[in-house]
Length: 206
Ligand SMILES: Nc1nc2c(ncn2[C@@H]2O[C@H](COP(=O)(O)OP(=O)(O)OP(=O)(O)O)[C@@H](O)[C@H]2O)c(=O)[nH]1
Ligand SMILES: [Mg+2]
Picture 1 (cartoon, rainbow, N blue to C red):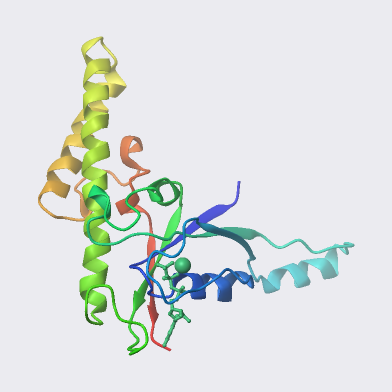
Picture 2: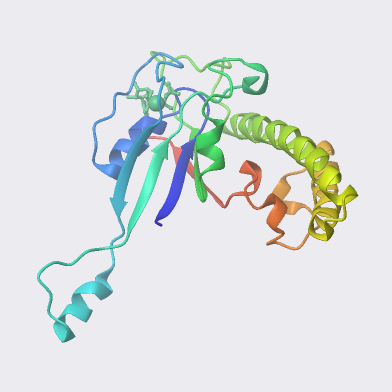
């Protein structure tokens, strides 16, 4: 299965524009916040100069590069966790991503008012991170309840999972990012938390 990469960011920061550049598609961009009601999905080929070199030794009819699926995920804003904007309907797309590209609006444009009143990429990043953290706390709390039930009937893995999940829970409740939680990096119960996916920051300042 290919790598799955999600593009996130505050409304109108240029996610779809970045998606179009990367995937050479023409998904619709717009000046209106929350205009998108679906995630855009594209496939990009990974450039790899080694393929051509290898072909010299092993000629082939067609060179097939590795691909990465990218998903342009709309709709995150301050308060998404309690239904602001289009709420949480796209969080499943974020959960399914192996890595995230966080697009930050660094450009000023009088024709495109910022949803929070001013251009401030640091605040925007904190806004989105906080939304993901709140969502992570919710899902971790649910998972702890499930695992505690399993632990009660003697499931040793569940008992260990509860211990790890509680470390994450406390860390997130202290407003810390899941990435910095003091646990072993590949602790299985939490590998799919949105807030701990590897993230690249894209400063959109054209
Ligand atoms: N000036 C300027 N405008 C940009 C830049 N990137 C995108 N835009 C414009 O900003 C508007 C919003 O861009 P989109 O790519 O639709 O933004 P989005 O983050 O996908 O928006 P939503 O899906 O509604 O959250 C469009 O009119 C783009 O043409 C940029 O770097 N500079
Ligand atoms: Mg968009």
